Image (cartoon, rainbow, N blue to C red; front, side):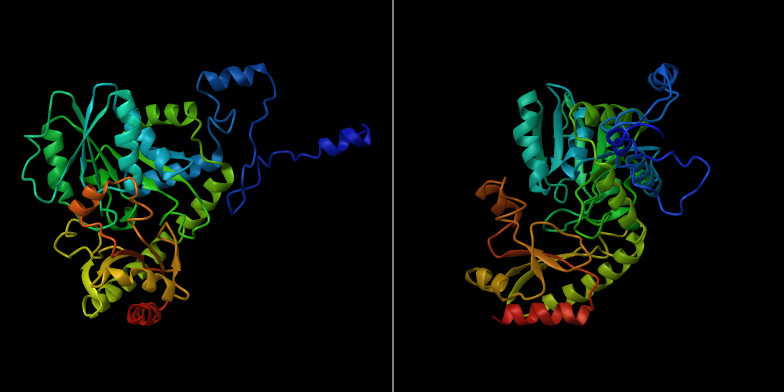
Amino acid sequence: MGERFETRTVHIGHQPLRQVASKSTPIYQTSVFAFEGLEEVEKYYSGEGEYLYTRNGNPNQTELSDAIAALEGAKAGVSASSGMGAIMAGLLAVLKPGDHVLASHEIYGGTYALLSKELTRFQIELECINLNELKTLSRHVRPTTKLLFMETITNPLLTVADMPFWIKQAKEHGLTVMVDNTFATPYLVQPITLGADLVVHSATKYIGGHSDVTSGVLVGDPELIARAREIVVNYGASLSPFEAWLTARGLKTLALRMERQCDNAKEVACFLKQHPAVAAVYYPSEESTAFFARQKQGAMVSFTLKDERKIYDFYRALQWIKFAPSLAGVETSVSHPVTTSHRAFTEEQRLATGITMGLVRLSVGIEAAADIISELDRALGK
């Protein structure tokens, strides 16, 4: 290259390795992709090319969404910059102004805020229902009802509704079904195989698994995913290449992590049920999770203190278990739903669902179960 120094320093780029297979997926940390000529650009827009601009698509994004789709038994998927971005894309792919949504009264606070504060601006109406008390959707379905939204394992009280039954009910009424499978992951259950149309993950949680990434994935019906992908692109909610790469790398150990974390959670739940400082323990039962693909109940445990006044002492007494407003990392952590994840709920809503000041949400990690129990026992003793 005979150009001057200034020019040569700019053009130090690589030649794409078209014939050499890398064992590990490269990070395509680029905002745009280069074309050899105008003909290639036209091929892209006619559907023959793969990538143009990372907001529109990137190999790392594709790898992640394709992997989750395959694990969930879905035909298509799209990634997003967060779990909320993926939820937004799924909802807007189905709903239009004037539509009515049925959602479980136990959902993540961020999802509730999106449905109740943002989508209502588009004249989309939300109705929350208790899937553990109802026998049928009939009284709640209207001509404008389009979607049933539910969580496999609810946040933060960890109840498990009879998903096969409710999906069947929804289909009888012509509703689209969207399931947040974040807490269960496809390791435990694949809602698509039970008839769900869309499945969403905050891949920030168990999919990534190491508390170092923020990402979301939506999988399901190809037509709905195609529309959701347009929404992700148009709303600027695309996942960055590096975040996609990190999430896909974390996914490789999902099965190992979930097996250990679920087994640890079961031991921790048994310990908490016997502890004199604990009033109630929330942990899925074997009966409620009978439709799961594996006989495990997840890696989350919630509990309430007998004396709510000691809630501040409990959090202060923890040493290596971190207090953090998220979950599902390899390290055990605790959160306080009233002041973090469910701030969007009114006090009346929180009390109605059992989200009290004394409630602790525990994300059980991969440490030795005996050490987790010892740390909790010491903090509860304070």
